[in-house]
Amino acid sequence: MVDVRFQNRDALARTDADEVALECVRAGIEAAHPAARVEETIAVRDGTLAVTAVDGTTTEYALDEYEDVFLIGGGNAAGHFARALEDELADRLTDGAVVTDDSTETATVDVLAGDHPVPSERGVEHARRILEIAECAGEGDLVIATITGGGSALLAAPAEPLSLSDLQATTEELLACGATIDEINAVRKHCSAIKGGRLARAAAPATVATVALSDVVGDDVSVIASGPTVPDPSTYADALTVLERYDLDVPTAVREHLEAGARGERPETPTADDPAFERTSAHVLGSGRTALEAARDAAREEGYEPLVLAAGVRGEAREAALTHVAIAEECRDTGGPASPPAVLLSGGETTVTLCDTPGRGGPNQEFVLSGALELEADGIVVASVDTDGIDGATDAAGAIANATTVPDAAGRNALERNDALPVLDDADALLRTGPTGTNVNDLRAIVVEPAD
Image 1 (cartoon, rainbow, N blue to C red):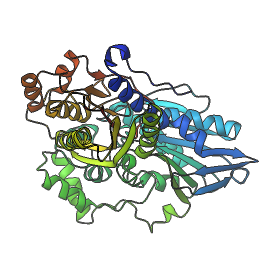
Image 2 (cartoon, rainbow, N blue to C red; image 1 turned 180 degrees about the horizontal axis):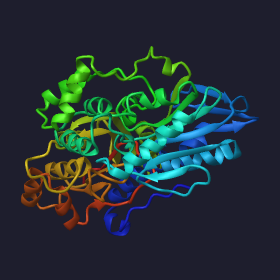
Image 3 (cartoon, rainbow, N blue to C red; image 1 turned 30 degrees about the vertical axis):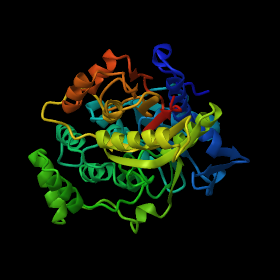
């Protein structure tokens, strides 16, 4: 049973609108939890493993035809994913290991610790354990790869001759520059021994079935966790373009490594025609849209008209907030595009371009702070969370606020310094859940009450 709880919920639910926003966010996170997704999409009957993806396609694996079944993977939700899959596979599962920052008890699979959003020494050590299991799989084996958001940092194995410190410095530069996740991962793939299809290459010629929870806009499996088990369309040249576009100050070893790859002196990540993918398949079992649909149903149950604006919102968090607020005010003033009482919902992944000396916060906190400061009317509540429970590098999932939550001067000063957390914390506006066991990126609920 999945049970997401907000710390200090009674204090957060100041009004009916706050309560509705919290309920929508809670429902969305719970619907995207691996236990819920496995229950809805995976079944083992008469020796056959059936996997149904979000697009409705079902793929079957005859378990009796495999000598051994291994489970490997990584990401924020990988531990809970492994536990749910163990319940389905039971004694058919031979061995396995996953790397995560949200541990849970399992019977067969080793749940190994890593760190997010910046890779760590223990994460590297444990990612190499994943590679070892993959390399041990033979032609007659089935490898199930559980891939979720956060896997790019948690499955960190530096490519030769790079070091962990090279990866850490590069990751910090990428996360601070405002680049898209596709751009960030193009660089990370080409600095890795496991990403960009290299884990599938290690497992070949075994059959590889990837089951994924998507935290990326468009659910591109080559981007989720930097696509360790699927073909990679990006190149070393693409990675270098990202460095130049954002003028990134990465370690010399990283730049030289990428330049050598672009000259053809290092092997490219495997593409779709690589033999490593002859016996692989990938299935997305849940995504941000899964969370949105559950939040929409929750709003309707509360008697509010739900309107899903988009599942793929991206760009600067503070700018995206202004658009959301403008739509909310339009609803309140004119009754369209949704008639109050209404809930506007969106998902996706916004970014923050950090100032030279940033404070504490994350994209969802910046979204809420920016939106609340822009509001000109009462009766509108803005809530936004990262569904993994960790917004940026903070202990908050996000925040909830209205036009009067934060004093204007203090809020705008905090926004300028990328320091949203302290001012929201002072206003008792932070949403804290702890690790949620899932990750399908951001979820936003803007509640609009009727005008007086």
